[in-house]
Length: 267
Ligand code: HXC
Ligand code: NAP
Image 1 (cartoon, rainbow, N blue to C red):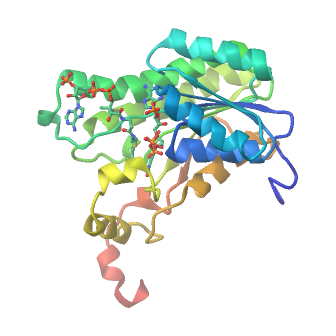
Image 2: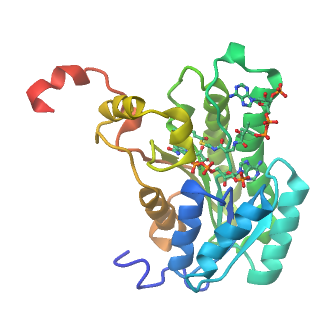
């Protein structure tokens, strides 16, 4: 992709983005719009999702924001039906709604655990499953947002680790089932991303932020644009033979830091 925006690589395409009122997913929706796609956005809050869509229409692109809870299949389906009516079949579906809080398993009720699994994992199934009838097939690209916690266990994140691990396996199963219909199914695993609600919750102090950066190969947080660029690539024909993969865009976070202290002057 020489210049995704100048070349309008998504011209004529429609994208549906779930969990798009803020953060990484809004950055992705904005990126898709700037590359030429019409974008439909959902989140729980009517006020927030309308404002998010407005950031896109203010730039002169086509967008609609609708309130829908990914835990409720019918509300997702209704939003998709409206988006389909307005913008036509979906070429791209991005499932990124998520919830997180930091708590030990013993400080978490059954409902607390279930809430995150419902939003992240069941929500992703609902979004991808509901989208199938509205997809432009063959050629559609479905992308979920997972996290390094899907493969790296973490204290105080049992709910997120379990939910995101489920998303990774769901990605692979759906890729197998829907590949014959010409539908690609992938996930992006972002590392710690600057200026997001996720990192505000996980590393609320400068000391925690510094400690996390010291354990990442690239020694820094990523940006929302890093993730949006990855989603854009997966949405184009440049990625037409890529399916069933978890694309790490994490500065090497998932590698861990075993032996990193011994790097000394070589760091
Ligand atoms: C323990 C908690 C808790 C906490 C909530 N609960 N916060 N338990 N410690 N800090 C429990 C509640 O007590 C309740 O259980 C249950 O969770 C549901 O809480 P509600 O507030 O009713 O849920 P809801 O309104 O649906 O809100 C969901 C939420 C909330 C996840 C709790 O934080 C939210 O809306 N988050 C969305 C935004 C967000 O989290 N963004 C960050 C995504 S980042 P009981 O038993 O009392 O009924 C991310 C990062 C991944 O995913 C990896 C990064 C590297
Ligand atoms: P964020 O800004 O809080 O984004 C989460 C979005 O999900 C919000 O728009 C929220 O909007 C929406 N949402 C929550 N529950 C929903 C529900 N039930 N139905 C519909 N929408 C819902 O957080 P973020 O940090 O940018 O994270 C975005 C994605 O990246 C998540 O999947 C997260 O797990 C993943 N991730 C983040 C990081 C990071 O460093 N931040 C790292 C790895 C992975 P409403 O409140 O309006 O519903």
